[in-house]
Image 1 (cartoon, rainbow over the protein chains, first blue to last red):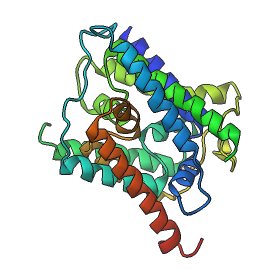
Image 2 (tube, chains in turn yellow, blue):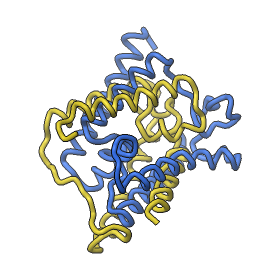
Image 3 (tube, one colour):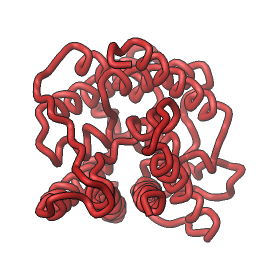
Image 4 (cartoon, rainbow over the protein chains, first blue to last red):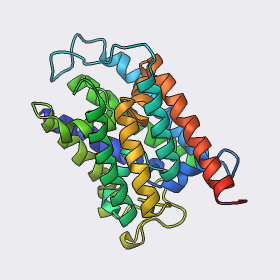
Length: 137
Length: 158
């Protein structure tokens, strides 16, 4: 059941990315290119997702626990630190250079090309490096 | 951008929100792609199964549209990946060397910063998390600055 839950959530996410056009890096760059021919599509995607999640979370949190697990696992930290903001800055740099964040890059696997394969391999190496640099691991 | 781009953007966004709601309601987890995938690759234990299933689902969303021949939604205006004969998935715009550097930065950055566009941008903003709001602001502004510098300074006039 947990596997099915994970699959269904992934499927909805992948369909959402494809239908909204976020699997096209040109459209993402079009949003980031604020001084060029600006494409606001990403605002609608993020807006639709945040509002739906905001409402959905509050409906779901009325229960004591999720349906298939014993507790909700939510981040508790509220402080800002260098690791968070520095990491976000590095991510922004890579996102701006390529037009890919992790979701769309992985969801684009059915259209795998040389440059995308290079991105995905480097992405996994980056995740591995980040774990090596994190004291918790 | 025309009205249909906004409509399909909104529809896709709602699907992403439903995905996040489903994952929270069933498994009590944040739908953060970088966290789910890096943990699926590098952590052992009971959560590996659903994380790998999520990965499979994520890939099968666009794959399903391709199989059904649905060139539907906000398809790539330039035609997408040529070999697919479909515009559901857009082609990369950067070359392999840039994509290598970008992938490394995205992996390192989302690993150190504990999240990407989905974990911080969608789920974090919906939770009204101050850390996610700050992270989202930083990565969006840095990405905009990166596009500005690489398009208009390094590559010459538009």
